[in-house]
Image (tube, rainbow, N blue to C red; front, side, top):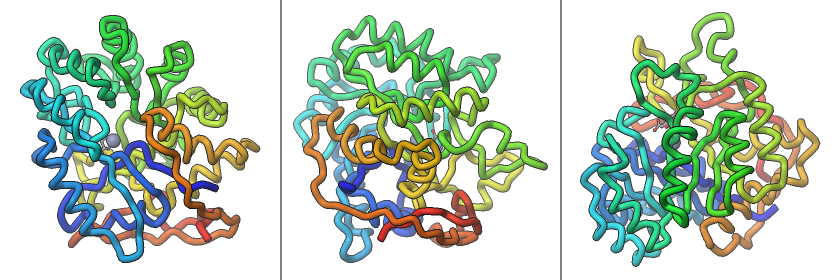
Length: 338
Ligand code: DOR
Ligand code: ZN
């Protein structure tokens, strides 16, 4: 197959980044890199600096192109968006509702505060990448995505009628329906973990912190809706791993962080799912064409080969001075890259 692109990736910073970037670069040609660092990437200059750090952390003989994003805050200026639109290494702006997830405290508190920025994005054809969950106190954690679509995303799209939007890491039937019924300017990424597991996995014989991510895993019927969308051949749904490494100590904690580290077997896990549903013929377009098409980028041309040969995921991987527990730690993965 043509080398894939990862539509949604967390690489972190410093020594942690140097430990994880190779896992993605070994397979993916490009990845859209999330800006939720501490402090967040809020200016074009910071994004370009971060990109250089990523490139200088790459293992030898890897060809990997990070596509950078800006973190939208209440203070983002329309001028910064105009600058972004002129800079080819930046691809879009990420909206984190304040408090929705890891390092989102600097996120947007009210969309009305960034309306001029959103209008500028629309005018300059800059896509908005959305963490689609409401943060309203009292809304059940399993309803946060659905409530966001209904009360925030739908009116947003109505008021900004040509803004390009990616609803990231979708987790529900409602999200799938919303994308399918929406216009072409609306796309969505789907993670491997939301295709593989439902919310029971978080509570299998005890509480399993390594299955805690945001948006949280949902009921089986939602997982099946995501599988159907991913294998449907619709170009509106594309691969985005949301691989999100956290140190073991930060996950196995009385207040554990959200995030699943899938990068060491990302494409291989998607292959398992697509094979299970007899849809391997749909994998290449989902993984390697639709993200590029949506963002108006050239499709990749180099190839990789996936072979069906089992291998064992290590129990842990390095994360700077610490370790991170990857998904399927110590278990077998059915596919590998030749
Ligand atoms: O599970 C998640 N982890 N969801 C997010 O939205 C953020 C990510 C992270 O950065 O750890
Ligand atoms: Zn993410």
